[in-house]
Length: 71
Image (cartoon, rainbow, N blue to C red; front, side, top):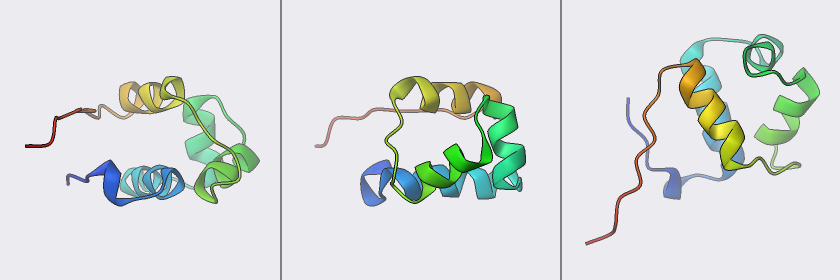
């Protein structure tokens, strides 16, 4: 599956990735070194996450992050 990050909020992106992994918020958080409340806050857009978290998720779940210039 492929998504355009521009089409979603930051929280939706985390939720989509977590749902792809078929993990609970607690289990997903453990995989990336965060607590369940942190994952909840990311998904609800209550807390911003940085590129470091996104890169950690990408490495943990073998995802590719691509930045492409619009045509």
